[in-house]
Image (cartoon, rainbow over all chains, first blue to last red; front, side, top):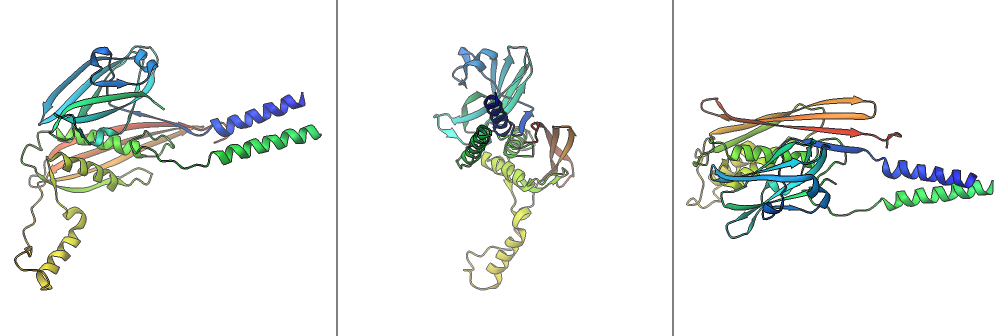
Length: 138
Length: 196
């Protein structure tokens, strides 16, 4: 009995030390999109659960002030909130990547059944192609 | 009694092992989402810069004549220490790389520029054919400025921080604000029962 109590005490200590670090989350407005099969040329999603819960419903692009503006529309197919990260990659007409500010991951929280538009603008006027990467928040 | 001591000993060893094991160093991606603490961090800086750069780049005020911009400062009205120069640097670097604007260095190193001009003109050390003349700096078209504010609330173990950054571009000649945009960020943190 005492042995069991001791083990229990140890496990509880472990829990508090290793699992109770401060938890923080970000809710940053704006977003990007994820896609279904039809949009697979533009969107990369590397998580099956995310693919099930998030659907890309539309991708629009246009030139604005000589820059490529992209809008990817996503919908949360579930009734629960969840978060994901997205990142835009930009390429010139020959497929060479153009470094821009958009190469960091941006966290997004999407509410249940919410539709969100993930908007990106190419960093230079040479941008002609794009790719959006979407992943489950870590 | 012996069993108790054994269990206690094992517990201490395991805890010590856990603490020792946690000490490590590794490289990470600068673009990774950072939520180590609730304070203003790299992800906030990157997100703000991206939103502002995108907004300004597609605004008609920039046009095709590559206007010259004077970068003023972003006032930090939060309770935290935030390196706002880092925000303006990130934004101005991205804008410059776009090829759509130019920036005057006068906002950062004006004294150095003056000293260099004096050095070239007065010391006699510089070839007169390559000497740069005083009075030929280009006057800026616009001034870039803004502020960052925050609202912080605590309730028990929960903490909520709301940041708002507002940036503006004003025509120096007319005083008209030609562009403005804002970005909001909400961060929430919750501590464990024992405050870890």
